[in-house]
Structure formats: structure tokens, C-alpha cells
Image (cartoon, rainbow, N blue to C red; front, side):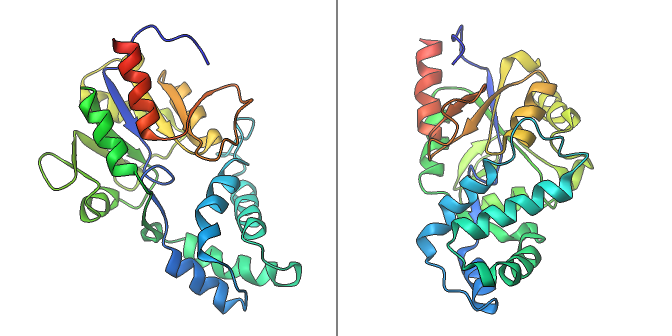
Length: 240
């Protein structure tokens, strides 16, 4: 990990894998249609293990179809689907993952972690590849919202479905930076897919941190955190 000089003025965060995961009921329904029996408790880990395959060496803008195919293949494998049912499971899962509204299962501890970040005094915002509805979705889940509300107060939600560009395009990060009125070197970013989040943040001049709750990226050439509370502790130390 690179040495810390001082903490950030703002932290921008991804939504998927940081605050929300795929709806387990819909995922299990897809597996049932594929005549597979998968335990609910393996689903969250399957996402992070599949996301780990999006390494920073991938050019996802040039080979998105291939990269996403590998994500789904690893997801199915990590869920323990028998070899003879994997193609059918993949087919049913693909239709579910095509819907951004699938991402509605709160990540345990994410709201508390976001509050811990807010308590450090940093400014907060969301940058997400979604369908234009991630802001209302996070608010409905009482995780966060722009301005006062039941969730944690944040300053902006920049959703690719609204701005017309997707990570790792640096322009989506720049849109959030502009809304905050900051310079890139004053901002950190948290995401869960290296080829999308780490690469995109670096292109925008932002310091990236990968959400790695399973410790899958210990030898990676980028910084990682196990939780938002761990990042809050890091910021408190850097700013102390």
C-alpha cells in the first residue's frame, strides 16, 4: 500500500458490490428455472469471486461481452452448479443480470460503514454504472440519499443511465468531481471491479480503493479495503 500523506476531501463510491448485491430471490429463481439447487448463503461470495476476474489488464470497453461472459461463468461455478446444468443456469442468470433493478440486496454493514465515513468529515457521493434509478433505489433502501433523509446524507449520485457514459470512461468520474467542485487528487473512489473501478478512477486522476471483503486481491498492484468502516479508520489516521 502506498504511503498516506493526508486524507481525502471527498470519497466517491460505487453502488454494486459496495452497497447492493443481486436480489437473492431473483437469482435463486433463475437457478430453480435451470433445475439447480443453490444455497442462498453462497451468492454474495460468488459475486466478489467473479468480480475479481475483471483484472486491470482487461480492456472492458473493447471486450465487454467476453468479460461479462466470464463473470457469469465464474459466478455459476462458485455457486456450485453441476457441470451439466451450467449452460442452462447461465442462460437464466443472463436475463436477470440484464436488469439493473436486480441490485437491491443491501450489503451487510454498508450503511453503518457509510455513516462511519461521514463521521470523518469527508464529503460523499455515488458513481455507478446503472439505469438512471440508482439514486432512488439507494434512498428507498434507506442506505443514502442526496440531502437529509432516513439514510446517510450524500452530495451526489452520478448514474451512467443519466449521464450517458459508463465506467471506466473517466468522464463519469469527472462529472462527480465537477459537482463537488474539487480537484481529482482531493478524491478517493471505492469500487469492486478492478478493470472498471480501479482503471476508471486512475484515468480520472482519483485514488482508487478496491472493496475486497474476501481478501482476494492481497498481492494486487492497487489499494484495497475489507469494508467501508476500514476505510473510515484509514481516513481518520491519514487526517489525524
